[in-house]
Length: 408
Image (tube, rainbow, N blue to C red; front, side, top):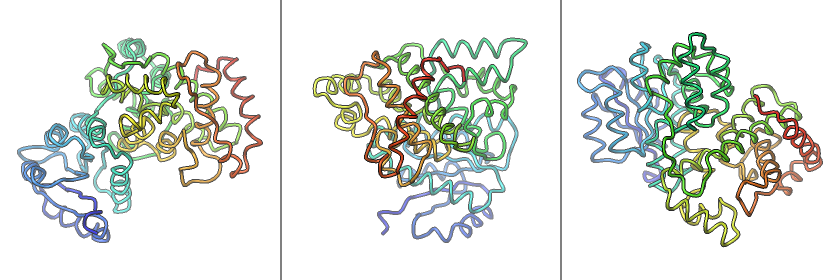
């Protein structure tokens, strides 16, 4: 039983708070092995001797503060999930934690919220088995954006008439900007935790001043200056991802999902291939080999990724999205968009919208470079009693592509 327990380290200079956490989480002792440290230095000493899955740290502590601690943890133990639990809401303090922290919780935090977040963080550890990739993904604090879109948002933010609506539109065009903005707004970095999956709404909630401070200080967006992504066209990937989001949104609307899930469908579609640039940029030679093997052996890309890397782009993208606290329907859309039957949920969902949209967009695009294109899981649709809806979705997607509905 001990071997299956997840290890969580809590760090706070207030002994009474640590005692309170110990009492609050007593019911989780069979699942978690919990340790408590009174300072950043004590935490680092513990980590040098014992492995940990998740670290939860206060921000303002004497000597080494929470931001400094998490930066050191990111350098020395990048595979650890890093969470801030702090009662301080000053913007300067929060800005310091944006890069090293995966998620942010505000004190006082109720027991169920804390348990839920920690359970999700622990469950994610099993999603990605390959440790070398897990270390890379866990250490990421931003994802480089396409130079054209990065320049566009910088220009807009420097404009004397900068518009929240325009910034939101630019963000929604780029998977990298979108996932980072949603990380911040769905955690408690700049306000209460909430379920937000609309980039425009996220930008509006954060406010233009906060966006400016984050972007212009280099805290959340960076420019991809010299792509190393062997065998991967980032421009083509962006086009496919954006169109998949548009088509998933159209399908979700047709199935009359509530607006929140329609937004989730768009974001899951936009981000469904997030793992591809992560793998290609961080492992360019191996990703080039993946492209070659997929072509020579007539494999789908996921099969080649699994054989060569021990992980697929679906798992990598979902791991990062989950680590950064994006809503579950979006994480599921990333994780299972090729194999929706593997997800426990039944019925129509953003995942199914993304699965269908991804396949149909690939079928419409003859320039995507993939010889073995993904296929609709007809058996799964039949089991759900939805196979008769496929023709309707195909027509909706054809119409959306023909009409060029890409200005979402």
